[in-house]
Image 1 (cartoon, helix red, strand yellow):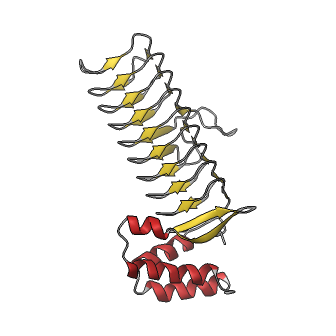
Image 2 (cartoon, one colour; image 1 turned 90 degrees about the vertical axis):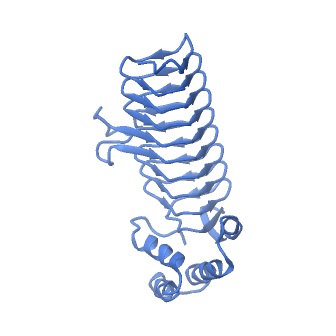
Image 3 (tube, one colour; image 1 turned 120 degrees about the vertical axis):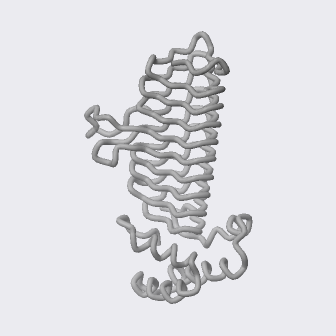
Length: 264
């Protein structure tokens, strides 16, 4: 199905009969769109992109050339079961980005939220969940089952180990290899492995966090990372700070819910 009369599809594009294109969709030269793909209104697909299904894409997205979207998961346990990719609205997907569908034993779905910038050569593996308003700089790689919150920035050449979680408003520095959970608001930089280097204060200011909120987050950071306290002792102190800070409560809830060790 090639959409309504306002869609613009290049004559060299190959589109499966079961694909569904919304109003005003533009499809560039040599694009391949497979079965069970749905593309929302006013989305633009650049030349040589491949979109495989089942994949649902929202409206107002831009896919630049050579992106490979909705491919099978890179998982040896995958046996062809029906799994999906769901992409929200207003995302920018740059050249050579790869985003895989989920796996049957991993929830069956990969999700990308709204208004994200996914820059060239980035990879989002099977069963990842990415929130809204994130920036993935060039060559960012998420292994399977990674969870990324809202307004997270991953700098160039960042790698994230499978099953790790990155909380809201975190900033991961260039070339960091993240092998543990990163609580909300933290800034992480690389040594041998990624290590916390303070809170993402500048980013929080830009997003309207006032001095009181930031001060509470800094106190929580000091309790977690700057003393000799064991993790259980640090969590007790965070609980005290959280009595007057919803942000610190969010950090503590994040830590308590983790399956991977805390990055510390």
